[in-house]
Image 1 (cartoon, rainbow, N blue to C red):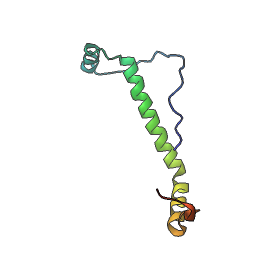
Image 2 (tube, rainbow, N blue to C red):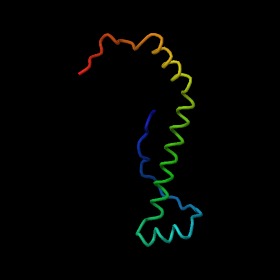
Image 3 (cartoon, rainbow, N blue to C red):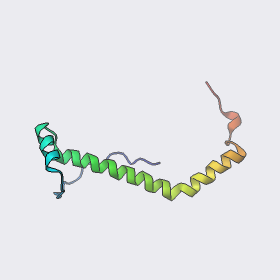
Image 4 (cartoon, helix red, strand yellow):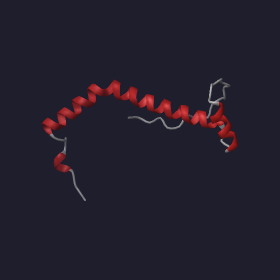
Amino acid sequence: MPDSGPVPPARRRATNVTLSEALVGLAKELGVNVSQACEAGLAAEVKAAGAKKWLEENREAIEYCNQYVEENGLLLEEYRTWF
């Protein structure tokens, strides 16, 4: 699955989110940057959703390739070396 890597630095955009008061309080006590933590969590969710979408979009091709290998073996298998 292709990995586009981290999102390049971009302009910042103010956004409203609703979070648990207790959680925000603990984060502040512990010196956690809430904005950075939210962004990191959102980035992880976006990456996971992108991977899931890619798998769904390519499921048929992946199944075809797996079936082909089961029935015919790997292409160029005779040239593989094991160390």
